[in-house]
Amino acid sequence: MRYDELIGQVRERGRLDSREEAERATRAVLETLGERLAGGEPHDLASQLPQEL
Image (cartoon, rainbow, N blue to C red; front, side):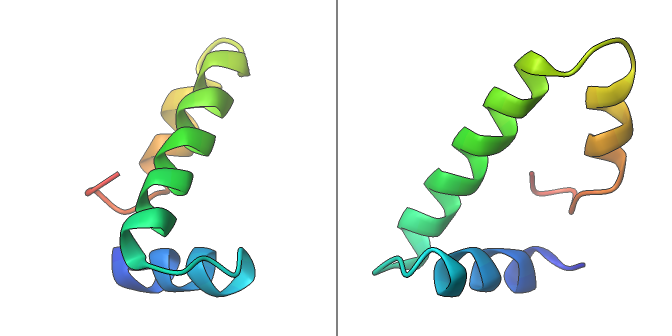
């Protein structure tokens, strides 16, 4: 999935008012998830995300 598509879906599904809000929410969720995943899972997840993230 491309970055623009992902952020658009986050904005739509989260009913957020702006792209900036969707970007902040996406980064916050991914950072928190990365802190909670074990072993190589954060790297595995990151490898599947758009490079901008």
